[in-house]
Image (cartoon, rainbow, N blue to C red; front, side, top):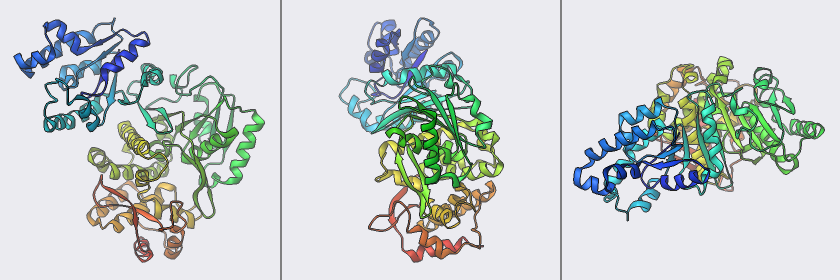
Length: 515
């Protein structure tokens, strides 16, 4: 049973209409309550009070959840405050779908209604804040409430959750130029996600794998039927124009057509290079991102940035090419070398610093290696990344915050030829530089201590010349005529983008990274 949850004004009634059009037997919990009570919800509130209404709601919803003839039910916004209802949702064969709505949008939709809890804005806002964490905790899937006819496109993906390993979750990434499902769970490789007819690799064309020589032998046989595989050497040094051309020519020789799709299986390099091949080949074919490293699972697999490096700078050539789907199997993290997993933690803490709130609190408490057993943190990092992309897909403003720590980090990678540090290790150093530039002394100490516990570098190789790093910063691909704008952060959850910084200040913080 599909169980719709969400705040008032999220459009659950509209969703029922759309689901009904797909042949599902749908019911509205409030309508059931009114039928049982013989009066309206508003009158129940007025005559009996909210406590009596909640008791009636609980009994009515529990009965409906046990009814095998119902395919989809919309719950009232406050139904999830009932412990009994939450337990029933978790215990039964139900797929809980949260229709996520912006607070201001919800208020505009309901302020003129007769809803008893929508008569005062301050009360409305307080309820919204209280209920959001509950929806997030119980949801198996998250869909945007304002997306028109979303169920025409998302229903198959929601239904796929029923066939995936228990605990798998899905959210719908939505931005100006496209949308796609993101699946996160344990054991997704080799699961129904890659079965014939699955919406995860969309369309009816053939699947071709794009991977590297390290990951392909581990997981290449878990992607469902493949018409061919293209493999590249592992590591950042494969992200070159020469390798791009070689891979494109391999694709042409294999007879890849525009109706086929690429499955990019691997870390950030495979995602960037394979995604750029997909974006370029015959002016674009679909790509499904299947990230296997921590950096890719929490960051680079989402949002459609693809590309290769030039000697002058990282990711200097590329294209925006949104994936058709992302399938993130956190079990793949168990096969990573310890150093690779550790390096990925830099992107985890970067995302947590940007998000603030409970994600920062959870990540700050993580010990070395514990991320492998915390798929919910990978899921929330991915959701945050996609929310930022949705607000600024083409990287013109808000999305720039995702480069926290990357300006100096990329420069360190460039001057060392992408060989001295893994990407996450360089970003760890870049984060410390950015926090010092932000004047966030206490936060910098906290992050430095955290990074040291994780095994991330907090000091730069003394062989690296700070002047070369400062020079490489000037080649940052986001440089404009105004210069290089940094992302600064004084408190978790409060990033400031496009902040000018003097070269002398950059030099000072880079020198400070030396032993």
